[in-house]
Picture 1 (cartoon, rainbow, N blue to C red):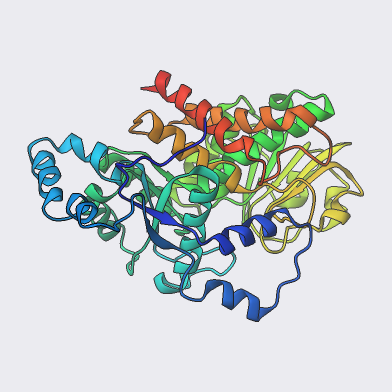
Picture 2: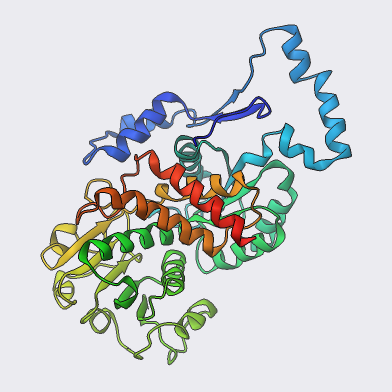
Amino acid sequence: MGFSATPRDRLRIDSPAEYSGAVSETLESPRVDISDDEIFAAHEGGKLSVGLTAPLDTQRALSLAYTPGVAQVSRAIATDRTLAARYTWANRLVAVVSDGSAVLGLGDIGAAASLPVMEGKCALFKEFGGLNAIPIVLDTKDPDEIVETLIRLRPTYGAVNLEDISAPRCFEIERRVIEALDCPVMHDDQHGTAIVALAALMGASKVLGRDMAAQRVVVSGAGAAGVACTNLLLAMGVSDITVLDSRGIVHSGRDDMNGVKNELSQRTNPDGRTGGLVEALDGADVFLGVSGGLVPEQLIATMAPDAIVFALSNPDPEIHPDAAAKYAAVVATGRSDFPNQINNVLAFPGIFRGALDVGARRITQKMMVAAAEAIHAVASEDLALDRIVPSPLDRRVGDAVAAAVALAADFSG
């Protein structure tokens, strides 16, 4: 079932129609030629606006929506705070929160410069999940201040999407925000990427006739996305995973790793490999790149026959898809101008909608797996080597993910 606004949602966030169309066209078009003038024109004045769910064109309507009528609603909520979920927009409002410390491929560009990205994220929530979302950019890198701010703003929103926060701070911030709040919280750079990557690996494994869990996987990148991808693959029974950071294979013999990597080293690399990408890729079945580091095609040639290569860094993948395709059976990127685009928009709108639909207080790993399985189920209807995940514009995906997440939440508590 699709989302429909109700009169109790007095305000909503609208993404202007022309921007909405541009989002769809950009996601769909294999190659988009856009000038700088067009880009800045599309962003002028921002990409979001506040709209009304009921007209205010009469004195009676004004009296109902604002004074004196609104006082009745405020008094009722003051007596019973749970009524805010029914009579305000907060219960279905997602706060998209960033400190601007790890924005796309731009790095630490600060809060103000991250706002266009957060506005775009909110537009995607509206377009593909039917959810209101507001950008909140915080001019601080202090985890204590970020957590405290979100605690104090809690009456305003119903869920938190953490976005573009640098590792390893992102792990602590997400953990603390989850502990502090009684609503769904997810760092999309971690889990959105992991969910869609898992769905893609399900698709690639199925089209190649393989047991996904029996494959040897190399994850290049031990930041937000790499750690989350590894954790989700481990949860799905993929036991032979080798993770690399900028200094080589993550293993228990190293003394230069942070706590997150040390913990990861205890659960990965079962054969005790050391060295770098050369040693890791030799004979591997799957390469999952989320690091931005370049991979020579000669190394892809050393992988197992009919390898799977996911080069997900944007805007420049770790290896050009055409080069990878010389040796790999399935190739995916994060870009829209090549087949098999692994795009987080397949996951986050439906995940949050499903969680909010059933009043879930947490987004659990079971819900994430359910989301990946739902994405895979949609793709499975016409699975192919060049279509292991659905198009980001496939309108079936949001509803399928929301339904699966809602069902998983019912059994997750």
